[in-house]
Length: 155
Image (cartoon, rainbow, N blue to C red; front, side, top):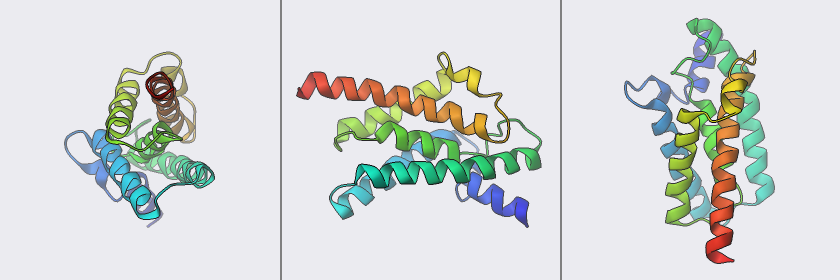
């Protein structure tokens, strides 16, 4: 029962079981959900956003580690909660507009797949930390680029 619950959470409701691009789909769904929450509440407080990232990361480390052991893989493709956390980091403190939502999703996926230094070095970390950490850093990279781009464009 514990294996099934952890896999359900780590795969974000079995979204990670999709046969094609489950990580990209999880990133897109996260961006859409973020936008809808933003539209309903008119703005998202940075403290709330950071709290959600921390909670998703903590839950992700636990469930990803358990799912990884249950599936017999270091970083199973079924685990996509790391994409949710990384995408939320990519969106942190950005003005919410179409450009930023699309760019954050594309840049996050680019860095998550490409894994520039030192992202790949984080993958071997044990107990779900590596599964989560590489995506969190990919989100940081995407966010930094977008913060700079928004600063240049909007002053």
